[in-house]
Length: 346
Image (tube, rainbow, N blue to C red; front, side, top):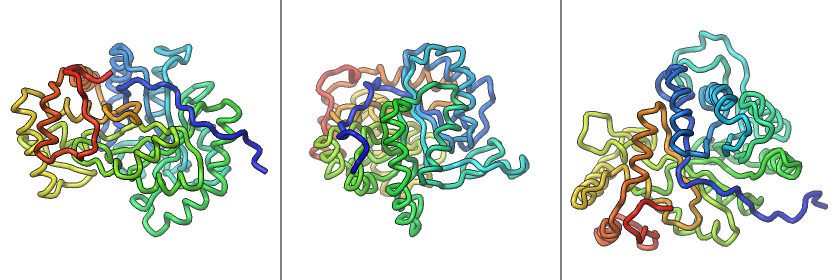
């Protein structure tokens, strides 16, 4: 018999804008300690009350940096934090290489997938130590799915269902975490997991954006039926929706060079935004929040300037006519909710 009470989804109320902390784990490039600290401080000063991190981000570096700065900025633990489980960090030699798994000059550990009961408990305890928190608000199983694991997905998924999921439920039942869920890059694995387990929240990166909304067809309706909230990560689809197509920056989509069809679609989005005098990045940041299952959007921010720019984009008033024009031009899913007031959402 199940030792847990009947599961009723409950996600703490999240602010519309959160802080994605992968960048301060040296994602793709080194971020100096002072700049990382300044980014977090600027986010707190800007009223951002939710921060997402993971052991994978710099192999403990993002969590350690957050723990150090929040000890001063948030001693009463009033900010909401999410972190992730599914990898354990194994010590390696400090000269393991300047860039590993996308992180530059990261901590001397190797991330190893482990979705077992013991692996999740170990990962949680180590995250709690690095973050210096008595409790972690949201705990998310990280990177399940075929996009990450390919043919090995079935084995990792079974390990999670047989052990890791039970560990997460225990932590929630004990009050060590407030909510449990998934942190993934594909909505298909969310539907698969929801067929076997119950979750409060899903952090879905890059799959509900101004560029793509296929999550509307089956995943978002399932979330609405079950009462599962969605956090949207990667709202800029690896940068192409913030940089656009006209600058000198490389055009990346889904962590890879953008294919021609995506570049063409972004050009059409840019043209529509230009007609209404709206920055493309502002539309990309605000669009996901119109859907009722979406609780928060969490772009990555590496320094205080990016925090200020993101806050300004979030506060940009967007005329409803832009959203209707995007729909009329076939650039939005016909069922995608659109903001109806000429102000930033919520």
